[in-house]
Length: 111
Image (cartoon, rainbow, N blue to C red; front, top):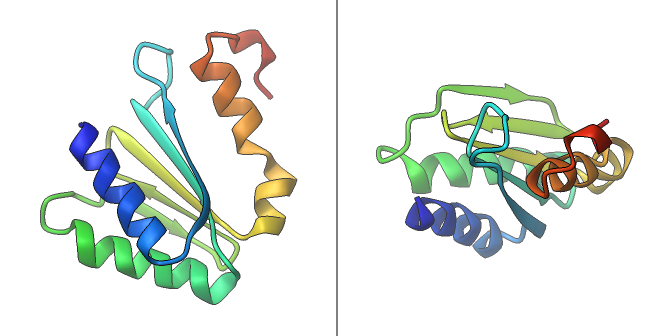
């Protein structure tokens, strides 16, 4: 699992994603074991990062579902969820607060 997370983070980092965060959600009553959040530079970069993930992770990873919009893309790998967002969407939806609360066992603090 660590190698998979490292490869995802490395792919995002090598392709200029910003503020990459990994949340360990194992045994936290969440539907995935890990969530990863990264900021893009804008809508076109969001789609480009998705393309880089597809190129670098396939065929080792199975992309179960991908929800795409220019401002926020969610990649479901089954046990890992990757969120790529423009800075504006990342600020607006503040997934870090929710995932940090969950990862630190403060489920009552979730939004």
